[in-house]
View 1: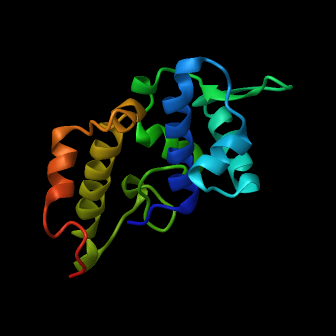
View 2 (view 1 turned 90 degrees about the vertical axis):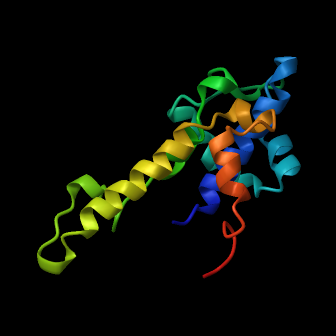
Length: 153
């Protein structure tokens, strides 16, 4: 599975908003872009997608900017990724449940469905507040601590 630059930038932008939310003032896109080293024009498109998905709100004008539309503990990483990239796991652009295989390839379908279920379980189980507090859920921390987690086979 591959996390797109768009999804990575979106999660980082939402995290930046969560960390700065305490003041209550909206955060300018330029400020988010600078803090997270995200190309400003690319970020504007991402923030538009996040706004349309109800993850962030925006306000125009001198005192304008972006803020989270919901509490950080009510926004999952899955919410953010879906807002900018669509379905979490697909095969050739199709959800696994919409696929069918014949013959020797039939066992692939339950494999793709299991993969999707596990990825969703992790991404739907981690909120922006968890990341902002550096408090990933224990099952996620345990998976990340496995010695082979980042090794190439």
